Length: 239
Image (cartoon, rainbow, N blue to C red):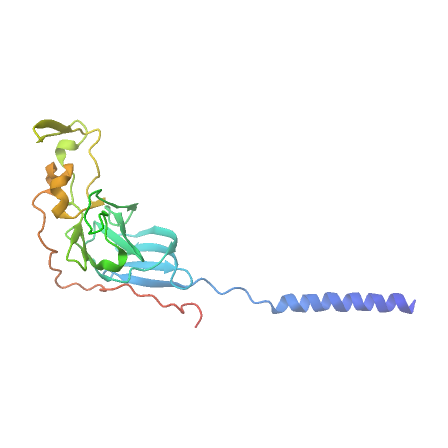
C-alpha cells in the first residue's frame, strides 16, 4: 500500500514539474519590422525579418497602397539611391544590379532585365554589383551608374503607339533589307529593360519612339527630401 502511495506521489511530482517547465517557456519575440528607405513623407519601404533580410513591402499612405515587393530573402541595396519618381518605381537589392519595378505607383511589381548586348569589358550585358555607383530614378526613368562611367537606363515612360494592338507596326531597313516590328511581338514594354545607350545601334529598339532622344546624362535631382541610401539595423528586434 505504501509503495502504491509513493509511486502516485512521484507521478504527481513529475507532472507538476513538467507543468512548471512549460510555464517558464517564453514565446518567441515578434519578427522586427523597420523602414529601410524613405522616398518622401508618405512613401517608404518596410522590411520584416531578422538580420536585415526578409520580406519587403512598399507603402504609400497617401494613395493607400501597401504591396509586396519581395516575399522573402530581400537584402538592402548598399549604393547611393535617389528616387523622386512616383509613378515609375525601381527597387534595387543587394548584390544584384537588376531592379524590381512598378509602373503603377507601386501597386504591382515585375523584375526588369538588361538588354542582350555586350556592354561590359568582359562581354556581358550587365554590370557587376561591385561596379555599381548609384541608382537614380527620376522623370519615370531609371539610371544606373557604374564605376566605369557607363549609364544603364530604362526607356522613356511610354510605349510606341505604332506597336499598340491594331497599330501599323514599325518598318525599318537594316543591311539593305526591309524588316518590321509587329504589334503582336513588340518586345519589352517601357521601363522593363535597361540598356547602355552606346549599344542602342545594335538593338532593334532604336527604331521605337520611346528609345529616341534619350538623356545624355543622368538628370539632376533637385530638392529631394528622401534618403540617399537605404538603412537597416542588424540588431533590430534584439534590443
